Length: 466
Image (tube, rainbow, N blue to C red; front, side, top):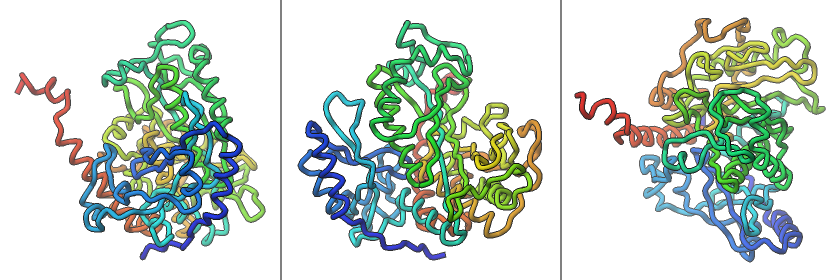
């Protein structure tokens, strides 16, 4: 299907009002970071002086278009055709309304705003992750009359800074008593108290930035934490929240002498970090279209689950976008490894939580915390829409251990996942053929680069034995 991009040139006259009001209310702010999220979910951009901000909101800000065709290391991927073929021409980064906020972790007075990419004509970019999600959400509304509602739940590790930067991370020492946790101690309140100064600053920073941070728990490994973000009726804003929250966690950790990592699997023998997407659908009156006391029999919910099962392998390259992502998929690790579903069951990839009635929703659990939230939600909604339009059926829910029950196999490695995504007609249909091809090309080249480099383990295994 030909990509369809609606013309939606931002209204600079309206946007600049937000910037001017912010600057008046924050006279001490000297610099403002423009934050753009690339294909790999990496934050890139520019640091503007205070005087440059009104013009950036009124007219957008030029930025080299090649930034959308770089790998996770920041190297150009010439194979996308987006570097030399178009002369590395500029695109325009426009502010995302409502995201201009202070940066609470900096020593000096700085602020930031999220930016989204448009062509110089004013049209949204066809290969930008956030614009991809915009298109999928708009199509979902058009074809179903329903509005996606979403929340992003993120797991991360706090680490000792010196060891982490040396590539051999250790759990951090307590900020209150200098003890180093070495046991799993899942849900231990003492772990939260040991890092109380960090969490106090984190929640205060979330308040400053308008982020709906909710419950905090100590997860299933030393130094592993999870904080949920409250659901948003605006699913796009839920992903904006996730992007801002990751920056906040990393910045606050640095301020306390720690490293915060969203790697999918930083430790061989410890739990990986996931990104769980909580999703439901709202009708025209704003009511939950999944609302039921019997989710097993709810037709709409079943169709959405079926679509997610059917497309999970197609989108695995988005859900697990890096070499390290695939280390997370291990049986009995709380990381799902099969396209299955269940009710109140954490051994499956699509879980319907215990809540019923108006709180009924699905939890998509297969993504790593290293994935790009915009592309993840675009792929999730594509799967749900596919299930609705094709009236798919998910079969019976899994009862008991989902790891032990046979199911269709997912791509087993990074290269297979990339090829499957590139060949997926469903992902091309909803996310756009050009986006699929560019993302797959970037990740294919990145994978080639990664595996061409000998790793320390190569020498441990082979230097003297072969």
